Length: 425
Image (cartoon, rainbow, N blue to C red):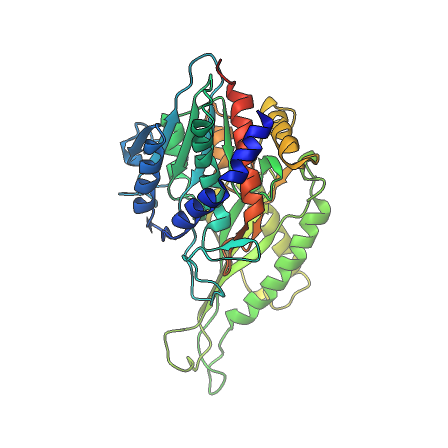
């Protein structure tokens, strides 16, 4: 059986690569609060139906209890952006396995690409495109498991479930939350881009807006402007110091001993009237930034805010610029980190599948990003593990997935499905 699985993957390389190229070719940008997933979702549903699965395409608003759930985000209703669930039913008596991916990507943005973002160009052993790495390669790898089982005429005891949700990027999670209110399984694998590390844990994070108020004006006559831009520049320097302080003082969970860094990333900065053709000719009245703050599982939003605000107050004692400003801290979105026990039977099963496929001991560690995994681990009966392909530049120009890593992921997933669900007959 092991040889048959490996041979099938090698014989179907071009089929699997072409399938990935096809879905990279769909523009599925998340333009929150709207999105473009629908056409790709319907095509995915058709593919899985053609593979003999029972397929459900549903609006998340149709799910009872979603709007009342404590974690529902009313700003992101996801109208006309359907989820897809496909089930390859087992013969009975086995454990169920779900592969849960998301179809949306971040927006392409205005920065130039060396490779067209939706062309699926192949060069240097990589497939280039927006969402290729995060996470269409992982999603398509799970779809290819169904084709492999069909071609190899392998029946499973347990149900195999392939899911594609909408609006995962930017902390959406409503698609995943709706799915957990309707479907669950004995184990879920979420194929986020982990570079083939097996990840029973993932970060959480806080998206925070920090605003500094000044006094607009110009530096002559009787005017006495107060420049919030100077203050925010000092605050950014303070964030760098705080980030280093966190990395030196945080208690590091066991799964993060090999990758202990917590990132603090400024991703937006606004000051002055940028609509003017030349320059505003005055000090602006306000400057603000947004910052993404990564956290370990178990950390709360209040803990992050209190720690940052306390550090700011301490910094004011020695910084004469910041001493004159009391910024507004406005949380925009909080995502929990989560984890399951690294000794969970799903982890050991994936380790076996990875070892058989790659011939090296697998790496088991915490993922260094936030995602929708916490919806599984904290708000459903389904335990979740992250495992996805190798690649680079997620959320950035020239995003790409390594083709060998993609093919290895397919092979790992085939072995995992057979091992977990059990082969019938």
